[in-house]
Length: 252
Image (cartoon, rainbow, N blue to C red):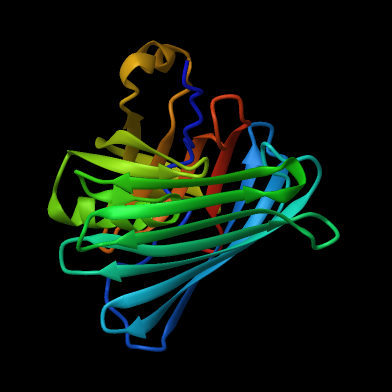
């Protein structure tokens, strides 16, 4: 039986004001992950830089405790993506995870051919003798962990209530998912009450659909005011057996 390892932190921890900004300009964001008792697990800072011709570079730097790793780790993820009027499309990803001594313990690389709707993904963990390379062909719009939050903004801008996508995970693998708008509610951010859209991603697990009954629900919240900024997330940190967490933006 095929092992199921789908990342459910899938309404990305990153999303930004949807307005275009000038080449060379940088937009920054900070956010913190805590367990359900309020204990901090990790913190991150991210930026998006416009590098011109509709191409952007997103960089995430984080450190702390993360499911599937022993002890504290840090990571740097760099993703290039294309932003058009109607969509966000990933071009490449390079993510490096380090132990407390600064040694690389995991590397993930992804390259996407936007014209051919294909992708090649590499996952390496040398200390565990893990080296995987997978090639994929996509028949729907494709998203990654880092690009999905940005894609969700376009989804809200369009007025859609649901959309079927394909999501690339870290194993690497590709899963069919459905992005859904669940309605509006009020959430507390830094002591403030903010009206928000609640979104979720529903994995279409095929032969594993029975597993959905055992999965806790995962949600993300976005401001109802354009540009639909990301506010927070509640659900699994990673795979099915990972920690249940809450992640919220700082300094709203």
